[in-house]
Image (tube, rainbow, N blue to C red; front, side):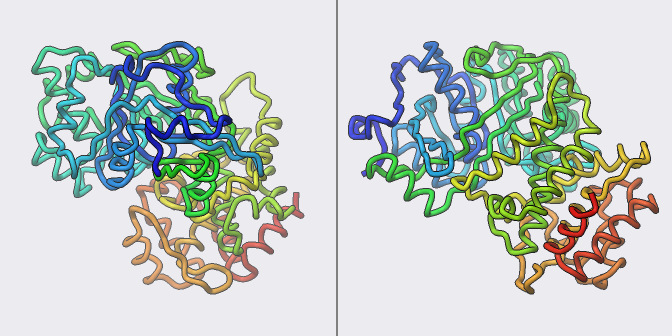
Length: 493
């Protein structure tokens, strides 16, 4: 028996269920990317706002590519899904009810999605599609016109397949109909995610119609956001626990995440917004300092642990936290190599680092190192390389960052320290395999991977000191493995 309006009364009394009239909700937000993170983050804040403050803001959930089953499950469950908070062995559960509609491009058609987005009452289009969904070049934050899907959208603007293409076409239709525009709000882990979104949308709009691009530039806002909640990929074991929490009721759309959640939003909306500040969301003038803090300290240390942990045989982040040398190295990275690069004010960064380490220790999470290691070509620039540039400019050491970058190079070389093959998940996987296959497993491998200008730019590969430091770390990983390399580095502090 599945979660639905009919089965809500059968749930254990401990489960929090929608206590508001869902019929009064109005679809005012179209969300692109109905993945685990959105369900465990933005949807939860909006659900709490409806429950505690009678908000009438509802969602139309959309997947453009993949995730067909998620959308179908949501439709079959009266648009209800659950979120379990995992704190070690203590779990608590909430049923979220703010989804009003759900669509998939391959099932319902792109025309139906565009029809919904062009309704006058749609005020916000929000996005969680991971970095690769923006079809941009991380080194320059510009649109990738060589992307196959972007090429399609340029040639077929009325039948878009990408997030930028859908937004451009929807704004074009609203402009033609004389409707107010909507706010475009990215909730993905990218520095200045609003700026990146604005760049790709305007670039695509200019290729279609310069007048449209001018209208977007003058009338549409792209607020940046910082989002934080650890939400591991759902596993069969997670599904079993969710079903147990629901008293035997199935919820294939359910997700699980840590208790902690944070959302910081640039308060720049053209057509209204929910009163998210009433439920703990921080509305600010400048999100960038918060973004940098999170991307470098949390995400940067996460990537550091993921690559070095996976190479050493640690499947989960909490396993890395059982190794005192990994803990010491991760803390040194955050305090000594990341915190010093930040512009955020009024935050105790040592306390923040320690709170992150405590979150990583949560044995209930089971956050796979392989999951965090995905899409490294898109993640490295903001998580590690921007900090390296700071240290090079200030002549300060970056030993942990160098080891983290070298660990990514060992990881994409395709074999862990036990000789087991690694399944690389990255939008540039074919290019990575080509570079690895055509280089020897020494300093030549480092120089070969540094040729990825989309990742490293032109400056870092030409900085002799940077190349030397990464090469030294790479050779250490090759010769003595990740575990011992981390131990040696940690003992040098």
